[in-house]
Image 1 (spheres, rainbow, N blue to C red):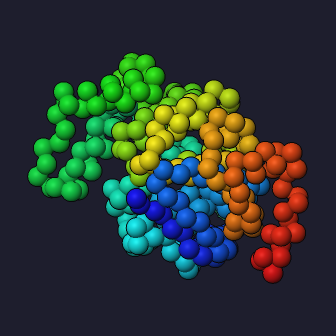
Image 2: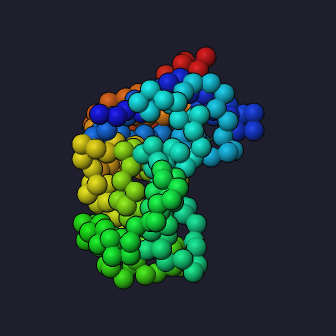
Image 3: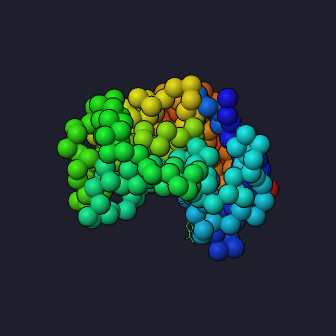
Length: 257
Ligand code: ADP
Ligand code: MG
């Protein structure tokens, strides 16, 4: 079983420290939720794990089975089994969902073996159909241009399909600030639930307790001030919905002091 161990992580954006000693271990087969007020660094955590260049790791590490992922390029992290679902995916007019996914599979194969001929069309069609059926997606979706004119829900669908195709060991889903409607939330939740199993560790980042009505996390963490200030089970999310974050503010301030 694999694990991703984030240890005392400090991250800055333009010399401003955002993550201030974040520690969290995610194991395959587990679903963790990170909640917290806006501006506490939730998206910073997601982008840092994937290797976005604007985020500078000043100290700490994230070990994937003992290997520090901060020493890897984003594509190496992806091949190592880490996946980030984007909050605002980019549209690529002219490239269909199917072509995009096939290119992603082939890029991965060629990185492992430079003379790989790539997945055959027949094999790819079969794979894609299997994934789309499992996610209850209309097959016509694969023929549309990626994210071009997609609704919020359709963009989420494309991200989930990408996740199903790439089969990560660890998936990070940042849903935080976007005004996701209930349909889009359900698409994400149904997708995560369909893909969950002993081989997938999921980190769901959300500002909204309501997402957790559909995804049952094993662990809930509250992030404030750039670190985790409280951890618990699924009931912690319910408690937060009722009580808000105020009861934790003192604790968050103390820990930073
Ligand atoms: P969250 O996802 O929890 O709402 P973020 O990780 O997006 O929080 O942001 C954490 C902090 O970093 C906020 O105070 C935000 O203003 C700041 N921040 C985010 N992006 C930038 C940036 N490009 N330059 C400067 N500060 C930023
Ligand atoms: Mg965010």
